[in-house]
Image (cartoon, rainbow, N blue to C red; front, side):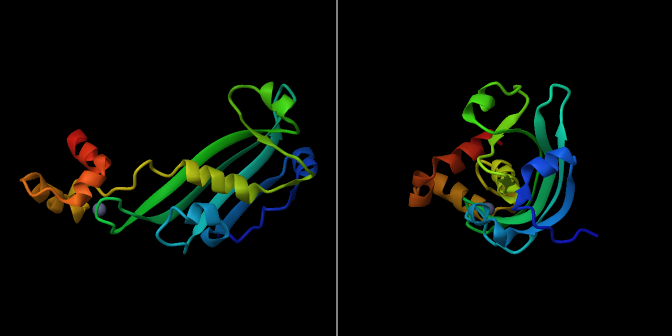
Length: 172
Ligand SMILES: [Zn+2]
């Protein structure tokens, strides 16, 4: 059973030296930037984090995070449940200069103090895993029939203002 685990104030050098491993969950409501994109801030982000040092001596953090979230469909404005998940590996560096020389496989995280806010890294990863456009499948979407009706002549403002919903329909 996962338990709530606070990883927002990790001692970075200690974590790397000890190859620290963390797992647990963070409340969605502790990720305000992510919540801005969600219809509902109730729920948890379940995660695993593993610190390490690769063969070339570069410290890294790899991890997995996932969450069942609720988005707002951009077409019908109804709610839309979605599972977000991300596997990531970031390279830990202490300056912009070091970031430039980091192996390409890593996304750099520049640490400016002894304390690493891993909650913020998890939040970034969840934000990156959000879909570009939140939209139901056609069959599930209350907006689809409205749009089809609009195509039959009576142009509605909604269709005109949202070129992406038309695009999504063409792609089907
Ligand atoms: Zn919809």
